[in-house]
Length: 389
Ligand code: NI
Image (cartoon, rainbow, N blue to C red):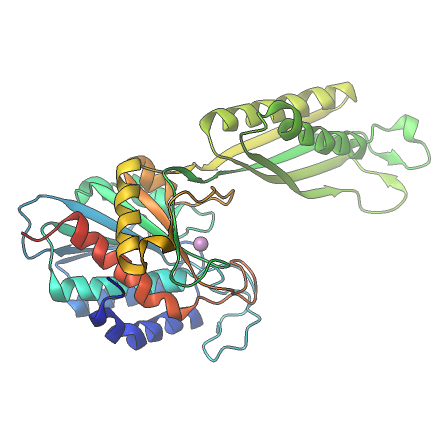
C-alpha cells in the first residue's frame, strides 16, 4: 500500500506550511510564531482538544477516533525549533531571519505532523486517541524533557510515543530503524585549568596550564582506544581549547570544552569516570589545579522492541518492506525524543530525504518530496496500532 491518496492531495498545502515555517525560523523555546501557527491549524482542522504552553512553548492536540473503546492513546511527536546558522541557499522561501535557519528539517517534521492531524481529524478511522505533540528546543535545550516534566504523558494518558527524523543521504522513500539504542547520549563537559602565568622566557617561574591541557586532551584519546571495549562505541570530542592572549606570556588559565557520545549507561559511566580521573591526576602531575564540569544532557534514544516492530511494519506498508532497513547502525548524534522514550514505550524512525546537504549545514533544506511518505506513515501508524472495529 503506497502513499495515501487523500494525503497526496494535501501535498501542495503541506508544502506551503513547511515553507512558511522555513522562512520564519525560531530558536529553542522561543518558537512563538511556529507554536501559534500549529495551534491555529489544529483548531482549523477541528481537533478535539488543544493545549499550548506545555513544556513552556510546546503544543499538544488530541484527536479522538470514531471509536475510543479500545482505550488506547498514542502520541506522535514533531519538533519545531531551528538552528543558529546563517542560511546559504537561494530558495524563494529562505530564512527571513539572519543567522537562524531550519537546518535540521524540523520545519518539515512539523508540517508533516500537521498534515497527519488534518487527515486524522477528517477521517477518524481508528479506535482510540491520537495525540499530536509539537515540541520546542530539540536542539540542545531539552524541550522534550520539559514537556515530560510538565506532566504531558499523564495529562493526556499517552501510552506509547513515536518520533521521526528526516535522513539526508538515504534515498527518498526509504525508512531505517532498529530496536534498542538508536541514537547516543549527548553530554557536555567544560574543564578549567589554573596555572601560574608569567614571562614566556622564564617558564621555570610559571606553571604553564597549556602543557597540562594538551596532556589532558591527548590522554582523553586513550579512554576510547584503551578503556572502552572495542566492540562498544564512544566519542570524546574536545571542541574548544582556549588559553593565552599573546605570544610572549604564559597564561594563567586554560579552558577546554566538548561533547561525549555513548550508547549505553555502562559506557557513559565509564567515560565520565575516566575523564574525571584524567583531569584530576594529570593536573596533579603538573602541580596545578583543574576542574571538570561534566553535564549529562540527552540520554540514549532507546527504541522499544514491540513498538519498533509496529513502526517498521507500518513503514513497510507505505514504501514496501524492502525499503525498510530494520537493523540500521546506531548514530552518535543525540535526540531529545529520548526523554519521551524513557517515559513511555515507543520508537523513533529515520526517513530518507535523498542526496541533499546534511543536517546542520547552511545549504541544507528539507526535501518536500518526502512529505506524503512521512504523513502517510503517521496516519497508518495510528490506524494500524488502533484499528477501527
Ligand atoms: Ni533534528
